[in-house]
Amino acid sequence: MKIATRFLLLLSLAALSACQKETVEPAETADFVPGELLVGLKDGVPITRAFRLADSLSFDIKQMSGFFYNSGLPKDSVAYVKRVLLSKPYLNKKGFTGDAVYFNTVDNKIRITDFFFDMDVASQQDWISTMQQLQLTSLNAAANMQLKVPIGSEKYWLTEVRKNSIVRWTELNGIGLIKLL
Image (cartoon, rainbow, N blue to C red; front, top):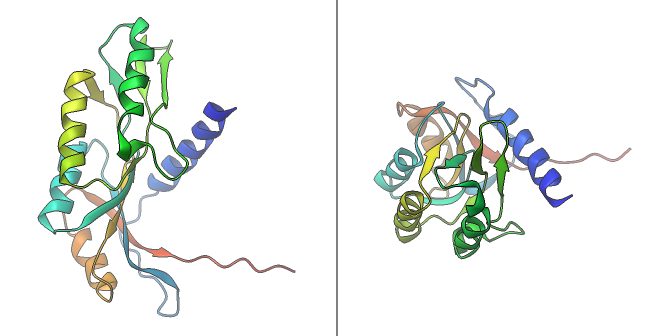
């Protein structure tokens, strides 16, 4: 059940990320989370380029998703891969655990579909090292990230970040309201 729920969540996020949004101009009256910007990346952008984008702007990465991987390790390494990922604090937050690992019988590869949280420079370097350790090959097609930007500058960065060659879309992190009848 846990894997099915994660799969549905990942599928939903991927579908949202895949939307081709060239420009997004939120309504002036729209509520949004102060200090947050959502960024959709173009297909095939490696996580290292996403790291460089955030680091070049001195923005903290609050969350990342859509960076999926195959491991070059043999099938009997699934438990090992899970142990390694469960040891990573940046994969084990907000109710998620770094055990989104399974053996994909279609391509006979170990697949990893985790979320990343609070990716500071040390965590970024650790993930790059982990990618080498686990022999990971990127599968990402619709990755996105949530950046922490200076409060009050969200609309400025909405436009500026969108100009980067690896960015597909940007949005303010809107606050949705539910109206009960």
